[in-house]
Image 1 (cartoon, one colour):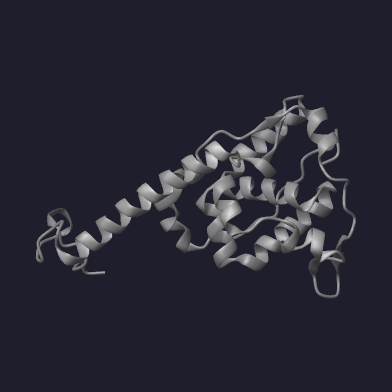
Image 2 (cartoon, rainbow, N blue to C red):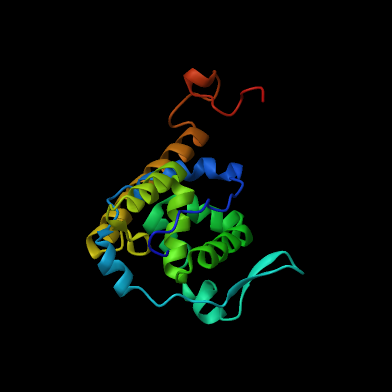
Length: 200
């Protein structure tokens, strides 16, 4: 993003109902985001890339350099999970094309690299209000958050992995336990163990 520019509105995406299950691993991105002094971040990042453009004939954002600006130039779904949690990861699974268009649009509007655009777009999907507030603070001189490398230190990756394993094991045991009756009787209502016989 150019210094002094006003943050543009992020591309909107429809949240799929499947995201309701994202809370199973909701703690994966709950660790602190790296902050970097403004001058250091802009001097260290890649030079702005200019191959992204809007194709009016197809009404889509495209790039002439897919190796650097396409999906191959960024990080995968697991990278989104570690950096920003389950919401952007699930969006990439269930709404991958819209996700890609959002990243390319951000690159073109902010004149930034694929990694920077992806990190910011993931953070926006995870919590739009916090992302917008952070950008406003940056305009007022606050340190720039390095979303491209958020939660990717060795320590944070290890802690996120352990937390995700614990939550997933607990969720699996709870679901299978309710299903086979270990956590409730085979007859009853919602408050007495029979989760599956409700009339809807």
